[in-house]
Amino acid sequence: MSAKNAWFIIIWVSLFAIGMAFVESAVVVYLRELYYPTGFEFPLREIHSNIALTEAIREAATLLMLISIGILVGRTATEKFGVFLFAFALWDIFYYVFLKAILNWPVEWLEWDVLFMLPVTWVGPVLAPMLNALVMAILGTLIIWAVQKHGRASISRLQWGLLIIGAVFILISYMEDYVLFMNDKMPLMEMFALSEEQISKYITQYKPDNFNWFLYGAGFILHVIAVILFGRKSIGR
Image (cartoon, rainbow, N blue to C red):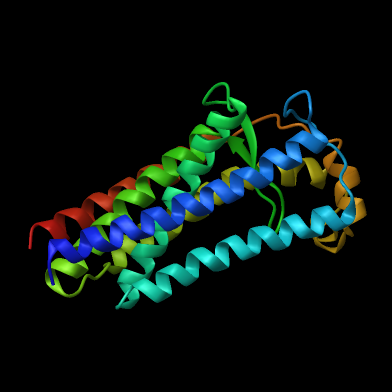
């Protein structure tokens, strides 16, 4: 167990995540060239149902790849989680780095973006997922470092509670605006029974109106507290 092993993992997982980020950003570059030749903006354009389904599967496949790298590299359950967090964070950060380099987008940090589309559309200012990714990268690094240095690392119940509650707050902040928009159109549960064609129809009417920074901020602070507590415990050993 040594710092050398930790650096080996961090460097190679970073290269994997950055490579994935470029592939992801390249797909978005192609989609925007096809559907937004004059620049990305809301409301979203209607896309063919096959393309929409392919995009949903691509997002699920991306998560599967990030989970897989954690399972393959980590030796303990906690380290697997840490590697996943670190890979996810680097992938997310460099996705926007490459979009900025290729398309000069986003123009500003508070520009709205579609963050995810499963199980419903997530939207938010670009700054929000970037801040999440920064905290995830720090926690992932601390976990990898602790396991490689001490042979193990444990996340306490309090820390898990802070991470889970914080994640719930943040996820709600990402989905809230879209869900409220759709709830004006139909009962909430009917939303999950819509076909790809119906979803595409409603998406072309949706324009983000409000991001719940208060709820997001509460979740973000809980995550920061959890990272600080874990860091003090793991580094202070």
